[in-house]
Structures are given as C-alpha cells and as structure tokens.
Length: 424
Image (cartoon, rainbow, N blue to C red; front, side, top):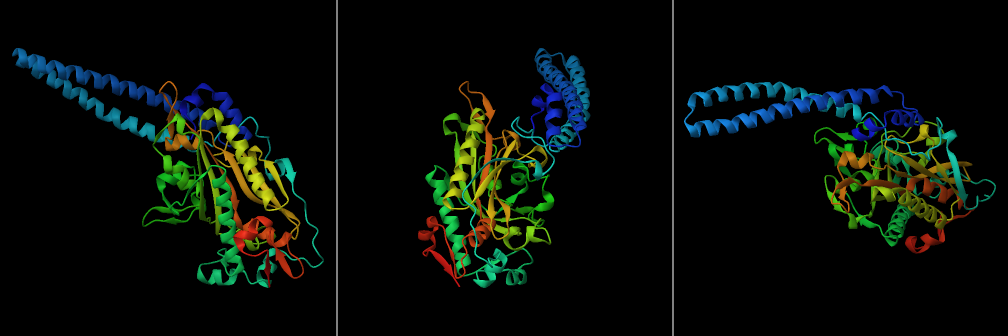
C-alpha cells in the first residue's frame, strides 16, 4: 500500500508512474488527497474539542476545591456539551479513515524507473539468456506423454481424488519432486537463507499484508467457516512473520526460505499453454524472501536474480531472464524479473520464477519497520522470488533430457534422487 505522504508530495509523478502500469483510474489519486484533507480537518476538530474537554475537566476540580460549586456545575455542563460534539466528529473521522483506506488499497505499487513501458508479455525485455537448447531425437514427446509412458504422474486419479488440475505424483515422479525440493532448500540455505516450514493456510490479515487481498481474492481458495485462505505461495506466511514488529537495523537483511504446496484457482482450461504440468491448481514451490534496509533493496534484488540464475544453470536447463514491462507486472511489485526455461519438446519458453522488489508496498500494509541510527522507525523493503516452482521445471527436465529409452537427470540431482536416470 502506498503511503499517503508520498502521494501528497508527488501527485503528478504518482499519476505518471501509475500510467506505466496502465492503471485505469488515476482519479483515485485525487480522491485520496480529498479524503486525507477531510481526515485532517476532522482530526484537528476532534483534537481541539478533546483538548477543551480536558482543560475544562481540570478546571472543575479546581473550582470544587475552592468551594465554587455553581461555577463547577456550569463547567460540567460545558464539558457535557463538548463531549456531545465529540461523538459525531469521532464517527465521521472513523468513516473517513475507512474510506481513505478503501481507496488506498485500490492503487497498485508504483513501478521503478527501470520498468519498461508496455501492455503485455510481448513488451517484456529479455535481459540475457543462458544454457544450451538441446537437440532431441526424432519422435521426442512433450511431458504430458512422457509422464504416462514412465508412469510418474497421474492426472486422471488426481481428478478422481480432488478435481481437474490436481496431479497425483507416484514412484519416480514423487521422488523427483522430493529431490528437487531438498536440493532447492539446501542451495538456498547455503546462500544464507534461514529455512521455515510455514502453515499452509493464512488468515485474512496475512493475505491482506502481502497484497493477495483484495486484489487476488478470486484466485485463492477460501474456507468461510474459519475465514482462512489456502496459500498461493509461501511468500504470504513467511513475509508476515514480522508483521507489526520493529526490527533492529543490525538484524537486516532478514533472509528466509520455505517449501510449501501452493494453491491457485486460476488454472485455465484448454490448449498446450495449460496442458499437463504447464498450469495446475496445486503445485510445490520453494520460495526466498528478504526484508532489507530501504537503501539496499535493489542491490538485494540483483543478488536474488543472480542466485536464481545460478540455480537454473546448475539444473543444466536453457533459460532466459525477462524484465517485465508495466502492463505485465504484478499489482504489488515495483520491479519484477521473470525466469523462463526452454522446453525443447514444446518448442516454447515456460515461466518458472518471478523475482520482485516490492519496496515498502507490502511492509506498509504489515507495519514491518526498523529503527535507524537516529532511533527513528522506518519501513523496511520486502522482496521475494521463486527458487523454484516445480511443475514446469519437472516438465522441462523430462522433455529436454529424454532419450529413446530413459530420462537423464541433471548431475546435481543424482545424489538427491539416488539414480542418474528415470527408466520405464
């Protein structure tokens, strides 16, 4: 959530930067100024009246001590009248603050100056590419055929157990999932991240804190009886660990990693873009999160991008890094880099990670602060990245490493998987 004082001090700049994200309602900026003006006026009226109540109340005690009962009674009536005026002002102030908050959460984060203009994925910038695209044998198959041939993922039984988009991993498929999760966690821990295993459901405050609510409410699985939400990523509970806390400057940066299943309703319907493991309702992912000093967040973002890049390189997968344009960015992000791996069997790029700097947008919602050298509190900056999401990584490992008789696994997975290949 944007800070009101930032909006007030940079009204035109805020509107201009929102246009980079193709935001359709820049008039909300003016509405925020209007509501904040009203809030300030009401707050002043309330504070002035309350001060008069306090002053008159003190006078009553003094008058009573002097034996001036009539004067004291007159003051009591004055205090009663003042208190009666306070109630409607207090109610209007609360309503104005709620209205201001409601409009504020409708504004997305402001894009960084590094964000390219554009309307869709076609306008994203390719930063760099790495790895070598494999040349497959004649008759090479996409992963949705390979998983049946090797009997490692069962979508039909998953649909029977739950519904479409909930895969059932089995045998070598389940083992490969476990091997990848353990490798990703070990890789992140080696880089200084502390491992967490968070709850897989969160309350409304946590979902609001990272910006899933109200922006992505329709994409989350909701349990009305408890008002809990199944997490779309471990970013949500992990970032909220420090909600409403004030950190010491020497605690920064806070580096966290977590494995979790992820639950998302928007799995799509038909076509190769959503076929097989390309898009599912439940999948596994390892996440990295950082809370950093506001002057260090873009340095931290570069570090996280390099971290994920090296992880992809270790899996021997061809990849590319994209800087997302304004029209393709997430609601809460100030700058996002997407990682895509190349599927040789599908002959297309598949997104496997997004790494983003949210600046103070999330931490303002969560009130995650630190004390600076002057003992003043400031908002920290938050960042997160997929390190990595498993379904499309698995799809590309299967497709890019297939031979006519087996699937060869990347060397870094041999000790985790216990074998060098997946056999029929």
